Image (cartoon, rainbow, N blue to C red; front, side):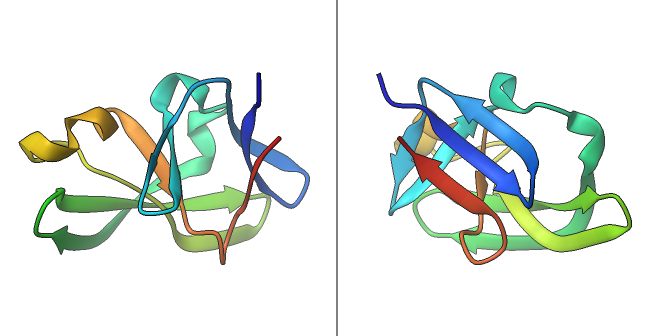
Length: 99
């Protein structure tokens, strides 16, 4: 069974054997988050017509902070309920692999 993994440098942010894929993005269940302390709430919010309002996290790795590296839908619309309680990462900021 494949494993999805999100890493920032050598720091594993999330790892899961089950996940959701939406629009090419891997959504990790919150239980897959390795250390919630590295996630810092951001004031950034965006809106998707079919998923709803996305909220963001910046990620700390030592002194390095990657702004808005991850997002989630706290209250997704009905068509996106499969990603409720899931977190996705920008592939341009965090290495996301499935192997």
